[in-house]
Amino acid sequence: MKFEVMRDRLLEALNDVMKAVSSKTTVAILTGIKIEAKKEGIYLTGSDADITIQTFIPLEEDGEQIVQLTQTGSIVLQARFFNEIVRKLPTNDVLIEVKNNYQTDVRSGKSEFHLIGQDANDYPLLPQMEEDQSFTMPADLVKSIIRETVFAVSTSESRPVLTGVNWQIRDGELMCVATDSHRLARRSTKLESAPSEEYNAVIPGKSLNELNKILEDNSEPVEIVLTSQQILFKAGNVLFYSRLLEGNYPDTSRLIPSEHKTLVVVNGRALHQAIDRASLLAREDRNNVVRFTTQGQSAVEISSNSPEIGKVEEQVLAEQIEGEELVISFSAKYMMDALKAIEGHDVQIQFTGVMRPFILKSVHDDAILQLILPVRTY
Image 1: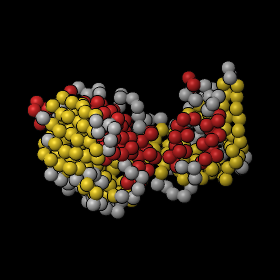
Image 2 (image 1 turned 90 degrees about the horizontal axis):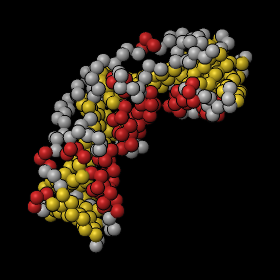
Image 3 (image 1 turned 180 degrees about the vertical axis):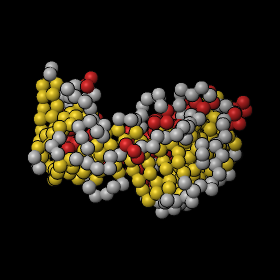
Image 4 (image 1 turned 60 degrees about the vertical axis):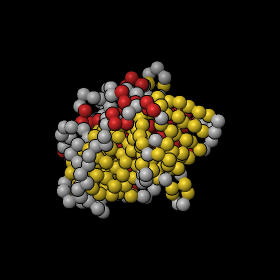
């Protein structure tokens, strides 16, 4: 194998595949990156068995030569060292050549590295995907959906299925739900090109976080291919595979209250900032709890009290308050996460009682719903 490639394009591709490489893997070869030189261009693959990412560097793009291919072939190189080496090479021209016994030369300017590679045939193959079930969505919409749900997945492995986001497709609508059993985030979206069959899968939160870092913030289409064990996202020259979590996701629709006793409409950004300030004094060991009190028809009070440090009270003007008066406590972090997902618009908060879950949604649309369980305080 022998080819020359532009360093900045190689680095860009490496940045993506490195997100799938883990040093904790039990399969030794997965600490490496597989490099394949084929007649159409260079393929790089990284995997930790849960996530597999493959990127492609074409020979030329927009009339510009990116790769000069002398000889096709493949090799697996230690990911961490190869990535660091490429990052620090002195010029933008990189020559990679594999000789006998997987000896690999990496040359740039007057710098020359000799690496010991591994046989690419020992590297696991990409998952096989039947492409009968697929649909497309703009990249920025996929990023939004991830951002508005993935923060609510559970970090505890006691119920592995809750460490993922449930993606459900039915009647041309995609419904994404995440919960850690103390809070819930839900996002629905109408699909323009929905698959014909219903689909229900749980995608690991870790996979979605890595995908979010790779996708560009633009309206380029992302093709999403579905099977019972894997999901594949195709964006530009990147293929992102993730395994799905096993087990049945709980039916969360029963948790969402259908009526409310108190309704508050308030500016999301103002409320977020007030809770952020109040949480400065909220005691760490009490899961930084703040108190929310309705005051008449026009304001809410955000307060926090810590005997050793002091207390804070702040009034936030409300657009609208109706129903019963209310004093309720909740985790400042959960509330700030929920408000961030709704993004600073006017927020409608519906309460059904002091110890009942309450919901937040944007005044402008019902696509995003956040649910939080209050905290009992004495």
